Image (cartoon, rainbow, N blue to C red; front, side):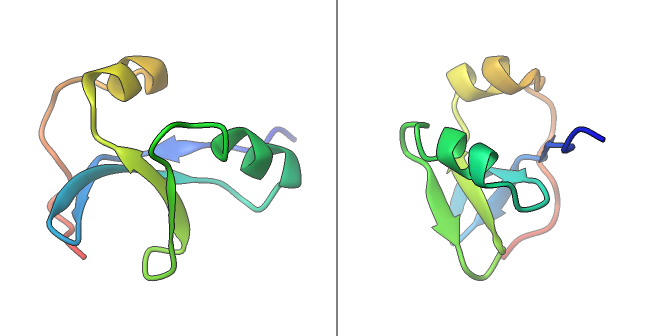
Length: 71
């Protein structure tokens, strides 16, 4: 079964970010590490990238509302 990636823009430490969530997979971790501006969040327990127009296009996200969850 393929690993499912999820993206849901939210606010983390006062910044709008796009968390990238997936079950641990060394290959996916290596791919995420290639993304510009990516960071690991210990509190979110996931990688995240800045919420930019380029990443929204790349991940197929609309310019729609943010998640109301704030960390």
